[in-house]
Structures are given as C-alpha cells and as structure tokens.
Amino acid sequence: MSATTATLPAMGRLPLRLVLWGAVLVLALIPLLNQLPESSALHVGDFIVTVTGKWITYAILALAIDLAWGYTGILSLGHGAFFALGGYAMGMHLMRLIGPRGAYGHPVLPDFMVFLGYPSLPWYWLGFDMFPYAFFMALFIPGLLALIVGYLAFRSRITGVYLSILTQALTYALMLAFFRNDMGFGGNNGFTDFKELLGMALNTPLARAVLFYASLVALVGSYWVCQRISVSKLGRVLVAIRDAESRVRFLGYSTTQVKLFVFVLSAVLAGLAGALYVPQVGIINPGEFSPGNSIEAVIWVAVGGRGTLIGAVVGAFSVNALKTWLTTAAPDLWLFALGGLFVAVTLFLPKGLVGLFRKAEK
Amino acid sequence: MTSSTILYLDDVSVVFDGFRALNNLSLFVDQGELRAIIGPNGAGKTTMMDVITGKTRPSAGTVKFRDADLTQLDEAAIATMGIGRKFQKPTVFDALTVFENLELALKAPRGPWACLRWVLGGEARGRIETTLEEIGLTARAHDRAAILSHGQRQWLEIGMLLMQDPELLLVDEPVAGMTDQETEHTAALLRRIAGTRSVVVVEHDLEFVRALDCKVTVLCEGSVLSEGDIDHVQNDPKVVEVYLGR
Ligand SMILES: Nc1ncnc2c1ncn2[C@@H]1O[C@H](COP(=O)(O)OP(=O)(O)OP(=O)(O)O)[C@@H](O)[C@H]1O
Ligand SMILES: [Mg+2]
Image (cartoon, rainbow over all chains, first blue to last red; front, side, top):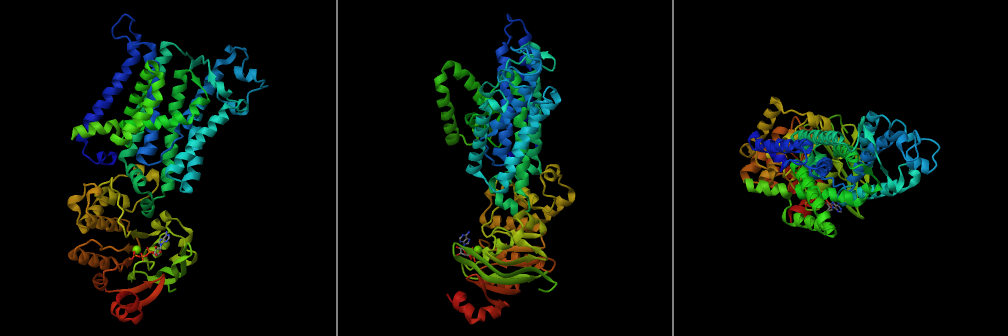
C-alpha cells in the first residue's frame, strides 16, 4: 500500500526510482530514434512517436484519476470531461492560429463559424489566439468546473456510487452540449485541420518531438506532484478519508475541504493531459466527452493498480498498448477484451498489475 | 448554568422515526469534571455523544459547549473546538501504522495545504512517543493498525483522543475487550486527565465505574433516571428496578 511505502525506509524505494527513471529514459529515446534513417534497424516510425506521445497524456489522466479514486476514494466516472475541456481550450488556440489558411480564407473566423454564418468571433473565443491564455484556460476551466461540482457534491455529502453517477451525468451533459452547433465549438465535427503551434508547423518531426517531450515533462511533473502529496501527511489524510471518512471528520478535518482540494487538482491534471493530447492527435470533438471514455480511463487505473502512482501509469500504457494492437488485429474484440480485463482484474488482481510484482518481491 | 459549566444539554430530544432515543435529556458537566454515564442497552448513551459531536441533530433542545451552540456546527468544527471522542466500536485507520494514526490525530492545523507542508518536528515526535508509551503500543508503532487486536485498537483510539488534546473527552465504552489490569490502567489514566480536562465516560462495567470514583448519571429511555455517587445510584430503587436488578 502506498501509505506504508511512504514510511518504509528509502531502501525499498530505491530500485523503484531507478526503474522509473529508466523508463523515462527509454521513452525519451523514441523521438531520437525517429530521426535515424529508415534503413537503420533502430529506426522508429512517426506513428510510434505520435501514439506513445498520446499514451503519455493518458498516463497523466490516469494519475489524476488515481489521486482522486485510488487515494481518496472519490470514484469519478466523468474525468474524461476535464480531459476534453483541456483539449477544447487547446483546440480553440489551434483554430485561432489557422488564421486565413482555412478553406473559406476568413482572416479571423474558423471555417465552421463562417459556414454557420457567425458575423464575428463570440466573446468567449477572445484571447485564445494567445498561447499563455489558452494554456491557462486549459487548466483553469476544468479546475473551476471541478470546484463547483465538487463543492456542491461534497458539501451535501454525496459519495460512493451517487458521486460516480453524478460525474457520469456531467460528462454526458457536456457531450450533448458540445454536439450543438450553437454552442460555438464546432458541433459534432469539433476542431481539426490544425496548422501550427508556437510557430512550429504541426505534422513535422520537430513538432512531434517537441510535443512528445512536453508531454513527458508534464508526466514526470505530475508524478512528482502526486508523489509529494502521497508521502506527506495530506496523503495519509486522503487514505484515511478513503477508508473511514466520517472518522476523519471527528478528528477535526474538514473532509469537504480536503476532497475539494484533491478533486480540483485532479481535474487540473486531467485538463493538462487533454491540452497535450489534442495537438498530437490533431482533432478534438464531442466524442471525447462520451461516458465510455471516462470509464475506460478508470479501467486503466484498476488494471495497473489503484492507490499506487506507478500502477496508474503502468495501467494507462499497458491497456492502451493492448487497445492499439487489438483495434487493428481484431477490432470487434476490443470492447469484450476491455470488459473481460476489468472483470478479471477485479476478481483476481484487486491490486492490479503492480500488485503482482509487489507480491513477487516478498 | 454556572460559569464553570463546560457542557450544557438542556431538554434535548432526538426522535428516530417516532422513536424517542433521547427524551428531554438535561445534563451539565463542569470544567475539569470526570463523569460516568451508565444505563441499560439502548438508553441513549451513544446517541447523546452523537448529539454533542454533531453526528446527530437533536429534534429539540439546547446543546452548548461554553457559549457555542453545537447544534449549528459540523463534526469537524466541533472537534477543532476541543471536543474529542472515542467511539464505542473502535475505528482506526487500518491502512496506516499506529504511529501514523496518532500523527493524524495530533493537534495541528487541519487544512489541506498545512497537511501537505507538515513536517514532523521533535516536539510532535516526543508527544507521539509519550502517548505510545502510555497506551503500551511502543513496540507496535510501525505496524499497520489492521493487524492490532481488539484491545489494542481500543488503546489506539484512546491514544488518538489524547493526541487531539481536547478540553472535553467523550469516551464510549473504553474498557470493552480489556484485561483487568488494562481496565485499572484506563481508570487511572482517565482520573489523571480529569482535573485539567473534562471527561465523560460511558461504561457498563460497574467495577470500572467505581474505580473512576466520580459522579454517576444513570440514563434510561433517553432521560436521566438518577444522579449521584456510585453507592447512591446503586441503591436507588428506580435504578435497581430498571437496570441493576435485571
Ligand atoms: N440512527 C438511528 N436510527 C434509528 N434508531 C437509532 C439510531 N441510532 C440509535 N437508535 C436507537 O436509539 C436507541 C438508543 O441507542 P444508543 O446507541 O444511544 O444506546 P446506548 O445507550 O448507547 O446503548 P448501548 O449500551 O447498547 O451502546 C436504541 O434503541 C437505538 O436502536
Ligand atoms: Mg452505545
């Protein structure tokens, strides 16, 4: 358990730390190997770079979910919404940067707005041409939404399955809203056909490498933040809330406040992941809000091992690797495989893949 | 209410689906007082503690700690005001070690940010070690609470109560599952704490209550049946009839 590793002497943690840095190093090699000539045996294709970069953002989302669920017991089935909102904020920036290069050649308005007859840019699109503002909004909007929803839910002591249903409904409602053309977010087509970011043309090896490394740095940073929390007294308060929330209240902790802190931080991390995801995959549409996405992300964490940070990361990578392989090898099987995996893990591996190794260590 | 009254319950009623768990209960506890509460099962003893600690809202009546109206505050606010509670069914945090359980209970700023920045200083460590000694769990300090025996969990809960350094301690059935020797130790500990703190103890074990050597309140069907020293209540015909005589 995380809580006990926190108090063990550093001895037991050193190999883990080495393994982690080793994994980061291996990942960091991928864009470099992509630069090798194609004839080289070590060359990796563009596809691998993009797909691994995408998984890295998924790993950040998994960490965010693990902090809320694995540590604090807040099972959100709507974290995909925070991810998607971060993605949309970045998508708005990318749309603004298209400028006059759109199909309609309008100097300011994105294609879909010209098509829908918008006379001018809606007020909430203002400022998104500036990267710092767009990046800030990618974190701020998910955080603000989590603050509002979390405040209402935690204050009314909505927990457990009720909270899960509430968050699931939230992402579903947002999906329906984003499907509407009059919302000003491109309706069911969402945003795509991005051209550039921070002065780099997208779809070039340089942009791919930069986005990949930015994601990797964000993953290491998110891991570090979650790790600091998990070894602090706050981390022990979270575990205590997960296991016996009312008892924590009688010790004088405002569990509402603590849960709100975690939920908002978790939403901000999810937003960060979404913001890094969109320029790499080149598209964002309301499908990202679909309830299934949020559930899938929870399954990554369950498979890897909830309540351990490494488990969340391992789960995100392994389940998505399986998905990438299976959706090409046998696309019809994927949903069955995902469901089967979840059932198998719940029944036989309650501590996930990481639990297997922990057991072997003893 | 005199100026030395620290806890003040007046005409308190709690109704669950038409059943009166507390029935116009009035009870006053002085600063530094040690008070024992006895009464048959279902008399409302635990419910009374629930009302004081904000778990249950009374249907009617006044509940005050000093000048604060406890019926308007939540559990966390009441706890930080200086009311600590030991539960009848010991609830400790299984995933944490004995030491960590005590550290969590230790009186310190409770906000998320303060907890994140918390560093265990020498003084805090000293207090935890003293408490570990007091509750006889020094050797188990780094064991997870999950593997403690029932009696040890009782002790850990008492330890957590001490760590909070409350002004009023509510102790629900502390000696259930303890050996005779441990029971004596607990009585001595509570007597020592009283004086600087106020302590309210609920217990069925009359030997233990006698050892506490304090004023005893007998609850029955949600209200006070009798009050006085242990000999007085034990000889009160009303008490004999409903409780001791059975
Ligand atoms: N939440 C609740 N809902 C309904 N009835 C309740 C609730 N809590 C307590 N009661 C009832 O109120 C009565 C008083 O219960 P309480 O737990 O206060 O008794 P007690 O004096 O502590 O008994 P014991 O000695 O068994 O611990 C009991 O009949 C109990 O069933
Ligand atoms: Mg009771």
